[in-house]
Every structure is written in structure tokens, then in C-alpha cells.
Image (cartoon, rainbow, N blue to C red; front, side, top):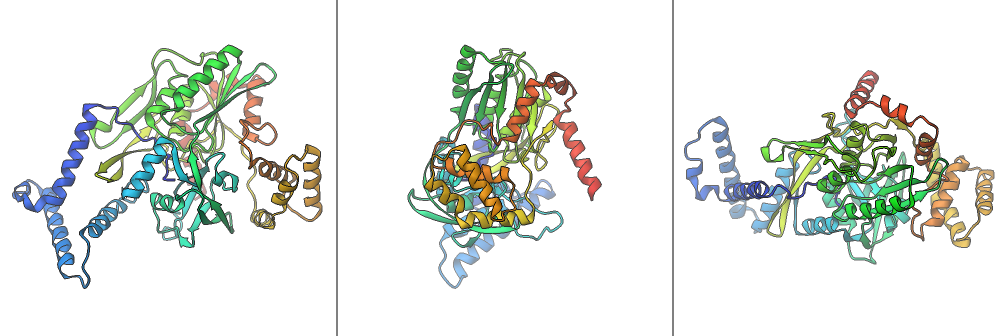
Length: 505
């Protein structure tokens, strides 16, 4: 997949948006035809205009020189695409890229929700400030549930270091996605780095249909808890949430949990409308860019779909990105929800796609800001209540890889696909007796997950989900109102996080 955690703005600004698109198209035409219309730069008005003219002239000269003098005949298209890629790569922004025909088609498929691939949301690994020249690989933001990638065991935070033997460090996100996608039924070999361990996973591609929502009522002391798991923000997400809310209203519920863990984002317009279901006033999100057309403030309308007296908790993790962070930030800053889980991904920018025939460019046009006027790009949103699974040591990571490579868990799942809880527990104790250093909890979860990989994923997990368990406890222990009143804004939490990180240096 291309990194779909884009909070990509839809063309909702009408004439203004169309005008800006026309301006961009005009600029691109000028850039390729500048020397047939020299009057545009004949008399530079300032130093910057003179500099622009000089660069255009140099570019045109080199372009023509290569076409006429290179040892082999060169296709103009090849030079054009190379120049476009280089121009966008020079921005140092992994989300601003040139889209060739295949990449533009892939992006359209993803936005529409159906494509051929293995079902991974990916992004470019962030630079390491201590080792700026270190290779930057492709990072898995999250696998899409009920897809080959999800069943194969990919996890958020895994690094893809090679695809079919090709080093991924030189690849941009969209280039890596193009290599992962392909004809359903064909295989792709992915080399993964998890912690300090590396291993290969071979996955068979399939038709991927991106789900948007799972919902259920969780029976719990104090009343039913309405559970919404938003998998991605698409045009289909809002009506499906509205249908779920109507069902909750008929049954009755005392509180709500909105789960956006491992949700990579989606459409800005979609998340704004969904946030508005919970809010009756105030800013939801603002966007700020260099171009005036990109500056906007999106505010809530007076009507409510979720009553104000219903406690709400939002679950996030490091796979929650972009539009997910917009929702979490809006509900947090408006004092409408507590945030439980772990620090989110940190993607606070908005991209536009501008087609150029059957190709195009994707360009970062603005950054978005939570109601407290904080942009969380590269920092993410810290939770009000931290809750996550324990991280593995290097020895445990190596033991996990060894266990997975042995096939012991997969063999057990094949032999006993309907294993009872007692049979599962007995197998876990056997693994521990044979010397596994992994905890019984982790082994039990690995086995349970393996047994579920051939089935549709459950809507929720009360057995091993630490964040969900923590959220349910807060909703029933009487501390919700106090915690909400004491909760700090996104701006305050990010400032605190940055100060703590600076103190460690």
C-alpha cells in the first residue's frame, strides 16, 4: 500500500480548489514550455525571479544536451520522469512524490477500498538524529485485518528491509507499495526486521478489500459499552458508523469506546464528519499551509449523535496515524474523551494529489493542528492513560523469531484448529517446560492469534487486550469524570514529551 495515513483533503473547496488546480497545471506547463515563451522571464522583477530563470535555462540546456549527445538514444519520457522524481525527492518529505501511471492507479484503488496486494499500511522509516546517514527502511504502520499480511503475522513497527531480495532503503513509500502489490495468487517475499532479529515471510497476494468499521456491544458491569473499531476513514465510514449508532440507541448503552489503533488514517472530510458526531461546538481541526486555499478551520455543528452524558474513551497505538490522530486530538482537546493506549504515529500533514494525464504528483500542501493549536507531526499524541503490551528484550525477540521459524505454533493450530482453552494452556506450559523464555501470556496470545488467522478477526478481545481492559476499568471504577477534568491538552502533553526527551540528551 501507499502510505494511506494521509488525512487527504477531498476537493471540497469548490471553485477555490479548482482554481488552485488550474494554477498548478499552468505552472507545470510553464515549467516545460518556459523557453518558448521567454517573455514570462524576459525582465526579472527581483533576485528570486532571476534565479528561477537561470535554473530553468540550465535545466533546459542539460535536458537538450543529454537528448542530443548521450552515447545511447534516450527517451524524453525517461528524462522527464527522472527529473520529476528528483525534484520531489529533494524536498525530503516522504509523502511528496511523483506518481507514475502504476502508482497513480494504486492510489485510486486504495482510496476506493479495493486492490491486489498483501494488506499492509506502510511508511518510510523516520531519520535517526544520532545516525543521519543510516539506511531508512520501510516501516509497517499496520496490517489490514483479515488479509494475507495480517494472517502472516506482520506487526506495527516491523521494518521491511527487502522485497523479493531488493533492498528497501532507497525506496520511497509508493515505490515499495508498488512492489508489494501485484496479481492475486502470486507470491512476494518480504524480509522483516523486528527488534534485532531478521527473518523472511513469503505471502500470497490476494484481492484486498479495505474494511472500514467493526462494532459490537460489550456486556459489562454498569451497563453495555458501545464499541466502535474504526479501521480506516473512507467515504463509507460515516454511514456505517451512523448505522451502528442507531443500533446502539435501540439496545441502549452506558458508555462508548472508539478504537482507532492501527488505523492509518484516510480522508480528512470523513474524519471531520465523524468527530462532529461527538461534538456540538468548537474547532475540530485546522489546516495551515503556505497557500491561502489550504488554510481552513473545521468546526462542529450543534447537533449530536452521541449524547454528551455518555463517557467516551479513544484507544490509540503507534499505528494510529493522520486522520486517527485528528479524531483523538479533537475529542481530547474538546474534553469529550479520554485517550488510552500508547503514543500515536505522528503524521500531521495533508497531501493533495494532482493528476497530470495518467501520471501525477502527490504534494504536502498543509499541516493540520488540533484544537489546542498543536501540530503532532513526528511527535504523535501521548495517551492520558498509558496501556500497552510489554516490549520484548533482544533475547526475547530472538526467541520469538526462533519459535515462529520452528513452526511449532502453526503445526499445533493445524492439528487442533478447534483447541479448547485447556488444550491451549497445556501446549503453552509444554513450550515453557521445553525452555522457552517467552511469558505464558505472550505464548498464549501467539497461539490464540494463530488459531484465528484462518477466520474472520473477532470484533474485540477481552482475553489479551491490555488497552481495552484498561479502558473498561476506567469506565466502571468511578474515575472517568475526574480523569477527564484533569486531562491535559494535546499541546501540553506534546510539550511535556519534548521536554522529557530533551532532558535525556
